[in-house]
Length: 235
Image 1 (cartoon, rainbow, N blue to C red):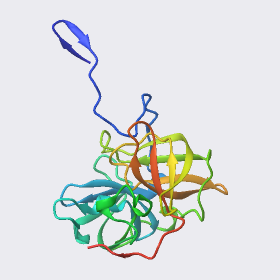
Image 2: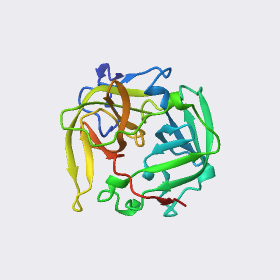
Image 3: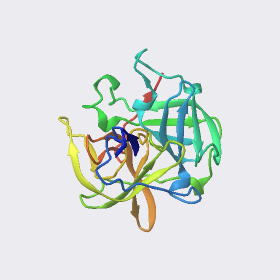
């Protein structure tokens, strides 16, 4: 709150797409799965998103995080860094990206209609974890009503990982060409792009999709990982 002319008035919060009137996000510790698989993807141009390990030296994130609007090109791979389990300047591992692949179905200049393919696979110069630090990819789409979790490095808490652990799949939406998106009601805003939409199968955490869109109110959409196309090198 701030005081003006002797009256206390509420300070309006910044616009936060994807966050409803009741913010249910909480800070999490980074010591075990699924959180220790997640890290900050940052570029030498100042960009920041979220990503997660799917193999010791392979990271998934959102492709739009790597697109440079001014030059209409993807950033060079060597300008991208992955900081696993980042927390207020500390991290479990750091690695530079040597190359990355973007789904050929994604068009950054037509983001809304190609968001089902808004995924990038980053290949690291050295492992950022072990087999105990990775998230397996779910073999299929979730069902409406399934409980899910989403956590990332968001614009209002960019130095820590925050998560909504009480959300659900609200729909499987398809674009005009029939490709699916996973709709959810998780609280998550800018900076969460590239985070895993998490579920549990057979008692273990799995990555269902990659967070790519935040609604104007609560919730957003994730690009599924279960039907990944053959990809091409992003440059």
